[in-house]
Amino acid sequence: MTDTTVSTSNLASPVVGSSIGTWVRDTGVANWNRFAAVNDEFMPIHMDDEAGRAAGLPGAIGMGNLVLSYLHGLVRSWTGAQGHVERLSVRFRKPNNKGRITATGTVTAVVASAAITHVEIELHVVDAAGDDIAPGSATVVLYHRAEV
Amino acid sequence: MESVISAEMQASIGRQITRTVSYSVAASDIRRWVIAVYWPEPAPKRYLQPDGAELLAPEDFNPFAWAVAEQWPFAAAAIGLEDPDRTERLLGLDGPGLRFQLHGGLSIDYGSPIAVGDVITSVATLAGYTEREGSLGLMLMTAIDEVWTNQRGEFIKHARLNIIRY
Image 1: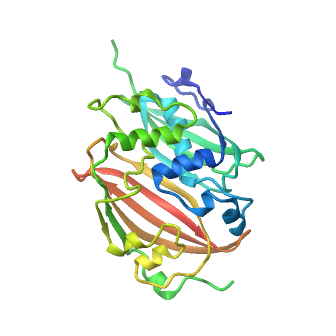
Image 2: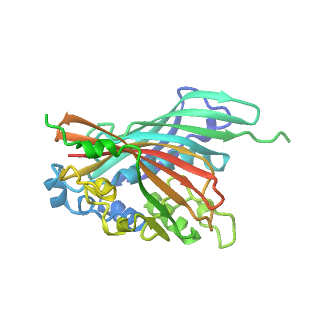
């Protein structure tokens, strides 16, 4: 199952504590092969279970760069064309093993100025075991709509 | 715990590792990137516009995948990304000889977006080494700074990467 649900109802006036939505992927070689093809990231550890086990892991694992892209996708799905990512940071605490991962974001701070609003977002990526494999944060710039 | 950070490695902190120049970014590069990332969901329509429409790459887009127009040092092309000693070999040093490497995370600040036709230059610099004992044994953390600019000299992004080797 995959699903990206976004909460755009609060985009005009973000509220601290509100969710920006979720990004769910059932990850495995189907995702990883497609990403490898565009990022030229054909490393054995991402393609072969034996190579993963030789590295001390349960099997093949997903790319950190793809998890990073998922986090960008989650934030981008929330902002749409009404904003952009100004900063994003993430720590890869646990490999993305095969299976479902769920990325979520929560607004933690809102600073509005005349033309734009800066929004701080706390990010998490939880795997099927319930572990947060990639905690992070983002700063987003939202553009104010012109008064009509 | 015996350190794997040699005196030569320590003395190389601050040195430039690579300078890479992309080919001109094509609309199809951006479309394929977005399709792969969003799969199995459809990519947002704004990335699938017809040729000639304004198309800006998503922030996570990599314009250096597969082939680049210029690369320094020249030897960089022959040292694969899967080589755990790649950083030190590019600096002309002996690496620590650790067997495996993982992406530890990164922090990125973004400037101007990448547009179709842009040529991007990346300069990577060795920022530091730290060590600790972890679940996988001795772990070497290597910090690398990458700064991207476009053909107009505009700031695209600054990424601080953390590579874990063990």
